[in-house]
Image (tube, rainbow, N blue to C red; front, side, top):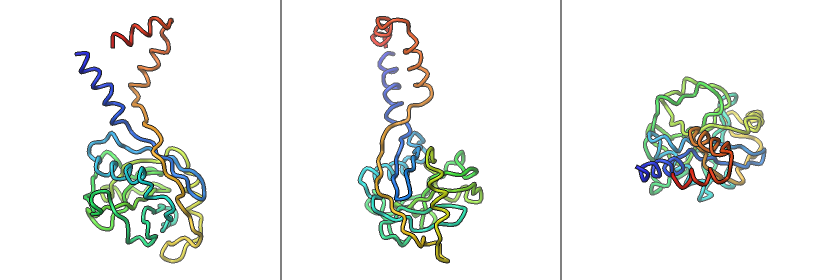
Length: 205
């Protein structure tokens, strides 16, 4: 039984949501990736691994759909490039019906057609419910919406290409977000009256 509890405890860290920081020429954005959602595991793994490979660094925000979304993730800067970690090939959409675009700041794959995802992604700057069920949502903005609003205000040509270059300069997977139940466990340990008691609890676990 103790081994089972230990496995569950360690698994909660392994599969916990990850946090990604994205430094751009207009400021820093912090993203929560839904790494613990098995429905979108291929998508989250692809994005996290590309971040770890620094694939997105020194790439441009290549399109701004005014008052809707910021699109990036293509090293060619054209909207026609980008490769996945899966042999450079496209991979299928992973639609979780519990995730939606009913609020701003949602992170999703910018596919080049149904079931054709590579490395491109977009972040919404307003609720866009008409996109529900069409694109794979795999994260959300937890800090930096003000930066995205600034990007949205950059002038573009008629095709949405920014007239001012916006670069992603640095991307890091910086930590794993602990599930709420683990936060509660940690709080209980902090409230133990003596250090000796907390040691005994750890040994029993």
